[in-house]
Length: 129
Length: 387
Image 1: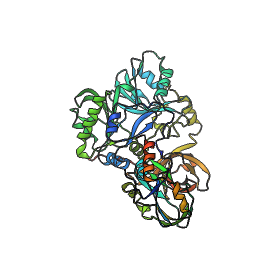
Image 2: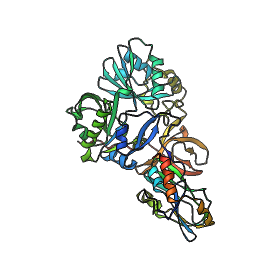
Image 3: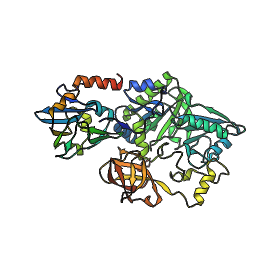
Image 4: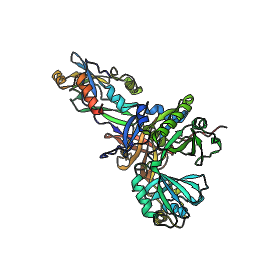
């Protein structure tokens, strides 16, 4: 599976795409595939402050529930409201289905995240392939 | 994202996972495999919801070879089975099966089982995978000394396939000359299936649907061949290979108990709503005195109920059940989205005073109290056959 090279990744399986000081966050294809059929996404509210590596919500499939962790610190500026009605679109295209957008507090935090090739290696190790 | 918690729970610290004869076949079908009670089993193939729906509307195929099979043979076999299990095996006719359970002396569960009467003086009980070793030791300890009974563990001799769904009969009928339409629910027979002689064909299952369980030799080539032939026979009905994920959601919709969840060695038969299977008029069986005691002291104090979420959220296994005033009154034993019903459902033990249908409770979901209501069980009942 190709992970977009322009994104940064966490070991908790989120991706972040940054445009200026606005970060767009989603979960990776590896994550959606591990979870299976996604049926529920719980997200914060606009204006909430997120801390790097702290949980900000959860995503649930039929068989599993998993916390969402913010890759970096920031303030929520936008929520993907369409996920309330159709969370399953994450299964169809995890790379472009975003969860929320944040105004970054400290863009330097991005440097500690994984590149697409690092993330690919990391997930390959996790699955033992 | 961090850890991905799956249900049914995974067992840790298992060094070597056991494999069924279909292990390589599952991997060829690109199943995601999990450690289930020490067994390397498929949790899902193409998708849990699709597999669940295939069983409700067409047909699905499960490998359930990890289940155990214990045979009781000899003139003392009926006495042994009846001492061991709470249902009354003397009511069974040859070719008939029933749901039963082995109890501890205190009336709690060792395991739930299905007892088959193979012939006079010959019974087969099917036990759970995760409890196999414990069960077999228990069986030998309780009835191994009884006269006239030989107890054999046949667990590794059979590949057990479950073909489940409204199109299960049409699928399996293509592979056998045995007239399946005359086999009643919870009855079985022997026939030629996929060219194999003497295959036990039982109209049983664990999905809430019509369906069959067949027992074939457990060598890999035979198991793999039959698996493939069943899938080919069911292709016109959209058959799907199904994993433990859909097995769990299907049995939950049908409100069937799972050992370690609804039943365990701390819950008694009446609490689990399984009192109708306990034949207290039998003179003796392990656990009988304890059940009589419960009955004579006003019945159980808590009860298994069905819950349906009113507010947004999914109650999962182990989540606390609260009264509307916030007091913890119980715990979810199994909870999940119900793919066919399209509701979020759960089973939980609550005090009797909270068990009335339509009563409201709350589920604590990650610190939030989310409202749910008590509903009648089962959540799902299959439609009656129309001709």
